[in-house]
Image (cartoon, rainbow, N blue to C red; front, top):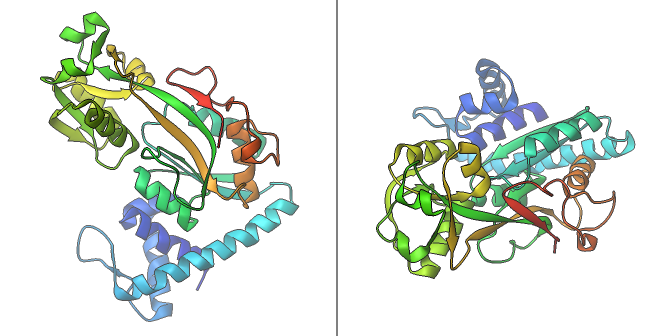
Length: 318
């Protein structure tokens, strides 16, 4: 039983299909399927029920899952120990992100990090907040951008930096609210809304805002991709709350909300005061502007990675 086979097994579990898992692992599907088949042959049991469109774990697969995670975690610790000695000439770091992240230009920051540490492989996963949180707690992710649901992070997770994002109402061009440029929550009672999928940080923030203000939204359409949400608003199906930067990038009218001004907090989180994985620790330092080895509770200034960028202002961690 090889570490590579276990990683392929976990990729199928996470992605739900062999096709998506192969894309994540950057190999052809036939090679990944063969790897999992060889693992099943070694263990003497099928790990997945392949009769449906999704790969569903069998009882044997469910029994293997926690042990596979533990074995991979041990292998990661071994790689991290070597990486620490070699000065990050090699290494691997996994980071999760919400789909609507705008307060940090993550692709640009990862490109800068790659130029500094070209031997470190970075894996990026976007998913709803609940999935990211569980993956972070399980050790499948080293870091994640999360949107806490009006409360502290779950036990065992530490905020390394946070940002406050302004939410605005986007409308189709020519909409009655576009000319005004601002509105009150109470004036939206008759508006149809396009909503993001339940369980995402954006949907949670918007639902909490509506409940706080007594706004009963009429949802005409809900989607799973932010690009589709923007296109539907542009087509006039409804209006939507989004971070300001998303509306500005789309070129749609951004209507400011008064009383109250809506917003959400985005947090970069990890496990413990500092990641044990040297590559993750280096990426944390880069994304927060922290001096190497500086603990999160000493981060008194905002994260320069987001400073001055439209859509949010960085706040101290803690």
